[in-house]
Length: 237
Image (cartoon, rainbow, N blue to C red; front, side, top):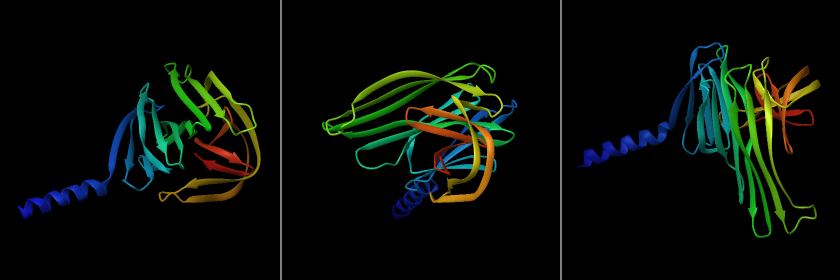
């Protein structure tokens, strides 16, 4: 009996410590079958997304909301972020494979809620639908809901519902609704496996990049990754 209990304890410990992993097969833009793997070790706060030797670390991670294969090309991942009290947050990530690399076609906030009802309530929600069958016809429909109801703020309350369409950039293989010229010295900030922000050395950038503007949020696509911007610093999503 003691041996059975010991075996059961070791087995459970192994399951808990080895974490949770799942893999999905997508078709690369070159038509080759490729695998994208998701791995999360409980209590680590970091989701690891990988393809071959390419790895993306998602920090302040809580859980997966949805994972969907879109037209066998894009892997759509909606995940819950760790945030403060009375708040909820999720992000939406579209991944694809190009030249053996893990690339981001989209990475944006899909849910932001601040709930202190009855005195204050703010809610932003985003739902997406892929349109088209190939790179020449892809579009992304975004259904946006944004509202604010506050008894304390001096600014007017509002309720906003609108549908936006993102085009697909055949050159950068990304969804976008704007273009912006970057010309200057910038710092790119990304997170490592431990969730620590690491700064990539400053460099001079002069190029036109795809952007996505959704309400008050703006995102910049630099080398197949999405960033937000504060002055001369870019922060990876």
